[in-house]
Image (tube, rainbow, N blue to C red; front, side):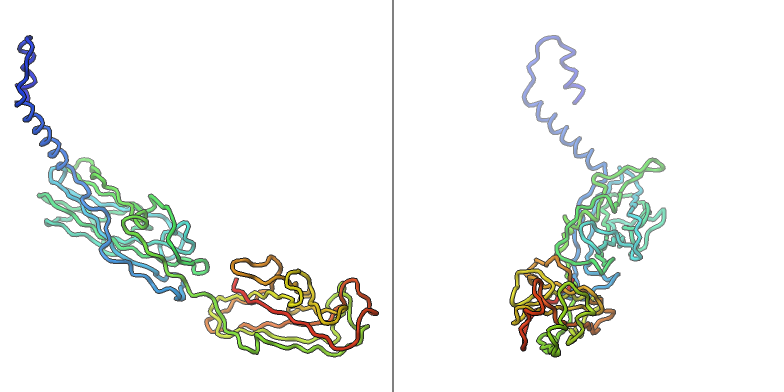
Length: 384
């Protein structure tokens, strides 16, 4: 009918009026031709789809390198017509990685990596392997191009491929959890092609799967578990202390410009101790003068207008600065002594401070008023 319809104008030079009824068969024939062309090529019939919900570790856990914080499985399906070729080929490729867990690092998520595994296949017809079949559990995210499946059959079929995903801690010192934010593409690739005889394999329509990109798409990851915060316990006796300095003569109180050894007369010590500390915990100490909370200086004001108190950390020679206390996310930029890290869970962290008298700037010995004095300071302990 196609030949008759298209050649008729050439047989007659007279103007021809086409019967309207002949248009319908042409449209129908063209439609049939398109369907046949489509069915002659293998194509993806289902995108990568979760087959299970994500299983996430609980927040507040202590995560170590190699720990899996989340896992799930997914599958994709392809319709494979025999007209496109009798042999199916699936090959996968990943990245060369330096960590021992074979996990691909996720940019934007410090300390976290992804492992993708081939978990086998199923088919609506029997497939006969003609090459190596990768065992279930084969890691594809850190391998060079590797054949997952080469098999043939003699009938049309639907092929289902299975994959598993594991989110792994690769650096527990920087892993923080939270919302997954990354835009990785082409780091892990799976290609699905069909081959007729000994010809060149032809890629299926949508025959490229990017498992890593699916983490922010069809295999959406929920919020990642956050690790346990570093912590210690502090007793009331540690947090509320009264330190008594010995009596001295006015001439024994050094000026503020002198070194630590010159102020040893009457000095005293106190300790700050944290117990039950989690491993790797560090403690930083920020001191504030209760008589002047806003000014940064290296002494405490006292009830004596000419005498102050200065603190030294352990064996350091420079007195500690006093100033505004940390608040919310704001942390002062002044020096803060740091203790730790704890070497094991349940550790005790202890450190000492020395308090000395000091003559305030622009004051002389004659300005010192004899008698008792007092000063007060608060300290904030932060986990840096």
